[in-house]
Image 1: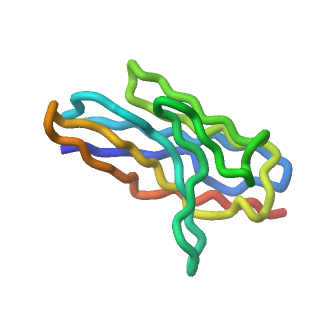
Image 2 (image 1 turned 60 degrees about the vertical axis):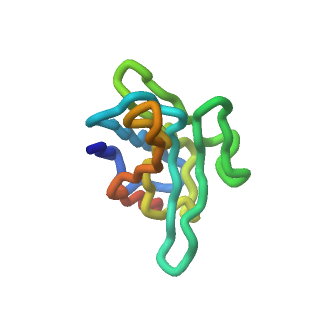
Image 3 (image 1 turned 30 degrees about the horizontal axis):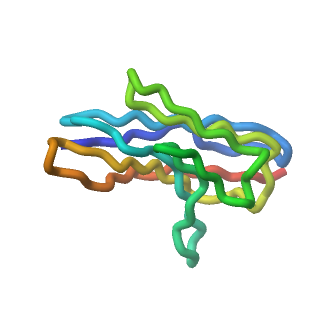
Length: 118
């Protein structure tokens, strides 16, 4: 069984910074990609950033957010700078990983709230 545990959300003023962390644990054979999505109530979940063979960002966060990974710890980080009110959302950690040579699945964290408000 695989778990993704997020931390680091909270309330921040516009222009501020936050760092989200997500650690994957359990029966992990290999990790193909890890990343972050976010969702606002009533809207679809959208990609924020993903790190795998390449790194991709949503246009709305390019230049402000940076994704990084620690392979030894199976952990992904999202460094968020110059936050805007429109970044307010529940942020979900994502992992595309293998639990064996033949088994590859997507996994999600429980979500962490990020609120940008003065």
